[in-house]
Amino acid sequence: MQSVKRIEIVVNYVELAKILEALEKAGVPGHTVIRNVAGKSRRGSFSDDLAMTMLDNVYVIAFFPPEKMSSVADYIRPILNKLGGTCFISDAVELLTTRCVGSES
Image (cartoon, rainbow, N blue to C red; front, side):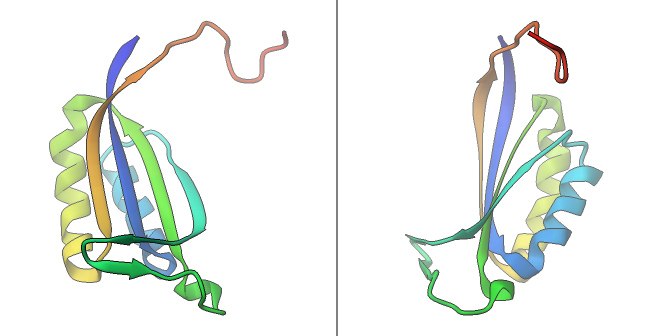
């Protein structure tokens, strides 16, 4: 097992490219994007009843080494301050396996 940081971000679809670019610049090795998310937070509701895809919210989750924490925060915070969205960073544990991607069973 290996300690990692987990970042979860909910932003408007229009801002997705900026978020993904910031994660890459910060040294985050990969990410997953889930489109068309809805919910409610302290800041209000994120609606899913809009007809246009460009106004949908997206959920971004990624994992990165703990030593990248400052860099990730430095790249993501200005984007969220300017454009809005929510972000959570927490501790996680990666379960390491011996199987490589693309290998046959």
